[in-house]
Image (cartoon, rainbow, N blue to C red; front, side, top):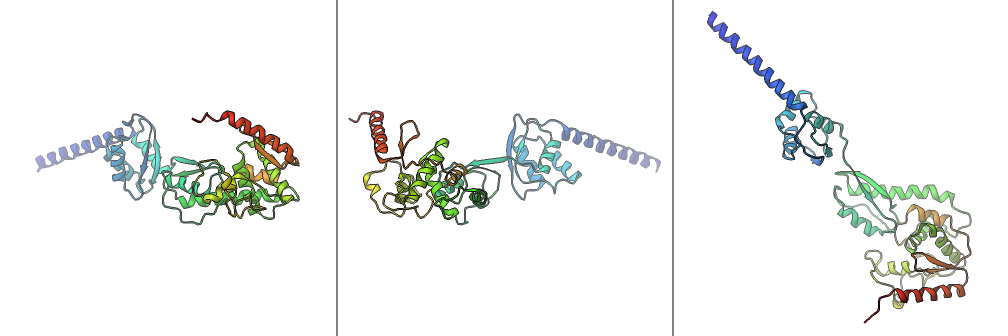
Length: 330
């Protein structure tokens, strides 16, 4: 009996030593720097348990031994609190810090910059091609509804959510800018402001010119003159679904369309693009110059005129310059 007790004592002793050794080894591996050679971004799918997450991270060389991460997560009861998403793991990150990263849920923030002057069709096409977004766009999107700016999102956000943020951005911008507009503008509604702003957006890419271009169109509306804006004609040819990759022709200018402001007086029936905040501000606070005409000046800007005679002079200068810039035709 005494001999049996001695053997049982030795067995318990070695079990204690073994468990302590495993525990010490596990803790050492848990806090030790990991094998990751350089910072890495990894997507943790939704619905994955700690074992599958550990295997995934080991496959990407973030951790060395999946079992260490699994045991640690269950021991400290964080296995249910781990977040799905896209995370950045720094070089040589330890399993302990991996758990902290997955628990805090601080995901990689992506961004999408929407340039001013894109049509809604072009923006939706960009959204379709943007990686990291989920689902299609099922909400109704009209021209001029989306505010161009930079939008931030995380992996798995839906395209619908981003579209709604763009629509909300435009609504908010108009709610702030419209009440502060200059008095006596020939614009009856916010929609008309967006229409004219979209034309200004397409007419000039120079910030310093926006209010001046807007002033020309405002003056023409007051005098019931046709706007004679080339971008409206170009939009009418394809309704914004296709970019016109050529110069307008005389035939184009005579082609009937609700958007052809060479044939129709007043504003077109809708926006021709999505204008930015600066163009909205320009049409709501146009330059008071008395100018009625503008034409390209060859420098990326425009030459402005009050009279038709002055405008014709500017047009002649531009055409002469244009001929010198064109390569010789065989």
